[in-house]
Length: 295
Ligand SMILES: [Zn+2]
Image 1: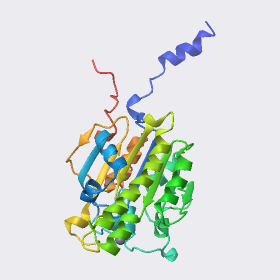
Image 2 (image 1 turned 135 degrees about the vertical axis):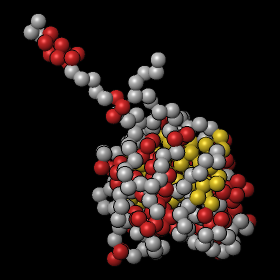
Image 3 (image 1 turned 90 degrees about the horizontal axis):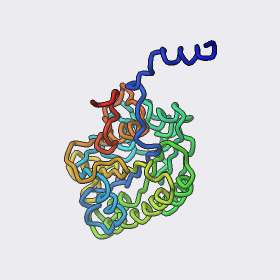
Image 4 (image 1 turned 60 degrees about the vertical axis):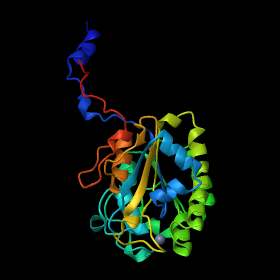
């Protein structure tokens, strides 16, 4: 009887509140940002991996970036879940004296809870988003997407649960030099897609590939040889999610770039912080586990 007492105590103890324990839809989130990629550019370019992700996953080709459709402000919103006025990254260059983003990013929140975080980027100004202590692996190997993708793929071959952010800059570079939607611009999306293939090969080679959510998106679009305005061509971005729990198909529900950070946290079973204005895109996380069994 004496030995049974602890068991009895256990049986009588209040059951853990299952509703409080968030399900973890995925173990890994990979956000790949194609700098300056318009949704119609993605559609027209020779980009077989992006097109396969769209076919196998969920795609919102009418997604929107923030009003300041420049690289650093937009990426800051993509990874922090708040608008530019809230995160304060309202400039678009590397200014070390201006410090780091002033709100917690999705990587910051996940890292605090013990997840691994990594950033592989081709533009040094994105360093402003890598708050010290929130990113285990910061890498800016080169401006070319081939080098960025190779470093990211090597990491992803053995990475532990967490968030990985990858950034390719070629579409933006070509847009400024040759014009958005011109042939050279579309070729640069094709090149970025080959780099993306390197990343996806690493993910899909893993035994636990079903535990990955991959989001392919962009910071902004562009028109003529510029962006940063409120023109629809600048504000529209593609938002494509690929993963085992995704409800397949194109969808038109409004997606804002701030939803990327919220979705990344939701994918890891982390509640969205109160300060976020972005919301998880539920259709890529799968059905919510009910708090009590349905009868
Ligand atoms: Zn640009």
